[in-house]
Length: 166
Image 1 (cartoon, rainbow, N blue to C red):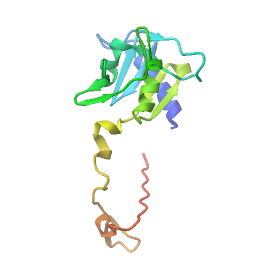
Image 2 (cartoon, rainbow, N blue to C red; image 1 turned 90 degrees about the vertical axis):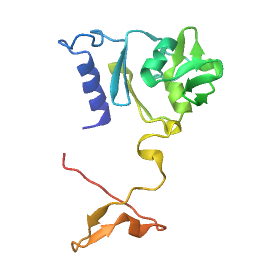
Image 3 (cartoon, rainbow, N blue to C red; image 1 turned 30 degrees about the vertical axis):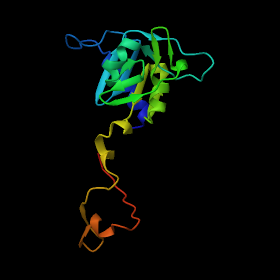
Image 4 (spheres, rainbow, N blue to C red; image 1 turned 180 degrees about the vertical axis):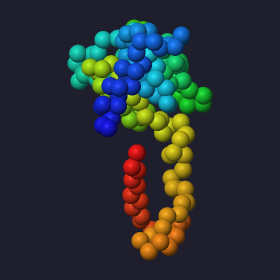
């Protein structure tokens, strides 16, 4: 399944009838996928006509609900981390979440027609899989069935190819 199709399905599922009490409104203005959550936003700003489509302008007060950051005079802050925000990233009560993600080095996949934006992990937060530049050791059989450990390749370049049938 391609990521674009996945985003359409997840976006549609987040607004499906029969959602549990307290779920997103029946027709959100946008759905944000971040950190294994789907956040339905009931109001978003209009994109800037001078920039290519796909920019998501959210209300400043929704930023903390989306990714845990809060806007302060020194920038967008979360715990001890503050990222300076240039003036064009904010206008009135709205904040350009897509531009912020790009500034923070966060991957963004957008499907504006389906009103779904997916934001990847923020490397600046130091969590998740990228917490260490060294891959964890694992063992796999070679072509003759002998066990091979990744640690045996330390200091050498190694290409690891994985595949899953699911």
